[in-house]
Length: 124
Image (cartoon, rainbow, N blue to C red; front, side, top):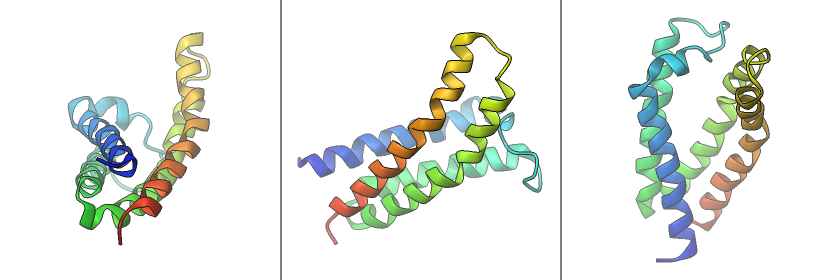
């Protein structure tokens, strides 16, 4: 297995784990859905979880890897407002929880760049 394949599979596992968490503990995700989004928070939680699972599946197949990786980069950028909301909402929590919430913010860019790298390394 090539380094590109390994990288894609690791990213797929990360997205699959996160997507699964949206259905296992949806309340945690409901709380970080920005209020300006229309509809119910649970709908957004389930939709984003399903998208993550679909992206993960797409990353595992060489035929769909490139498109899925670019879509994952876009998705990771799109959910950044939820991370900002979480950091803001957790600003008065304990130091470890604040650190976790604030730590998610700068980690989003490397995840986006990782997905883009997987797309560029995918066979056409």
